[in-house]
Length: 82
Image 1 (cartoon, rainbow, N blue to C red):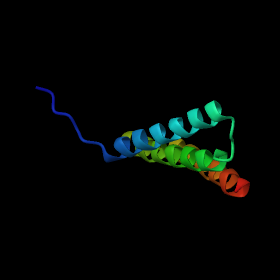
Image 2: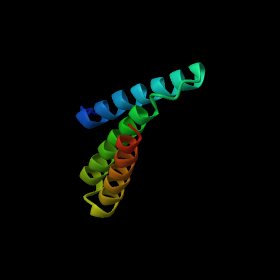
Image 3: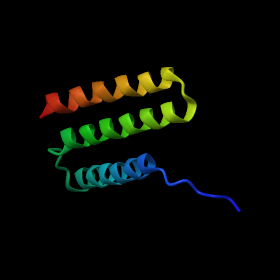
Image 4: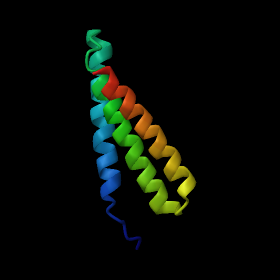
């Protein structure tokens, strides 16, 4: 039988992705885009988690740094938009 690993980072990634999608859908349906900075911050957290998972999976620092830099840039834009 195949044993399944419980990946906490994947659980957090899915939680933040669902929250991100709900905020995007709310903004599209209502036409109010005042929550856009929050969605950018959530996207930054998602990219950070993806980078950590990718580094743990492949031990390749290149993709981890790429996702980290992308996450920091999106975080900067999201905080600046507040």
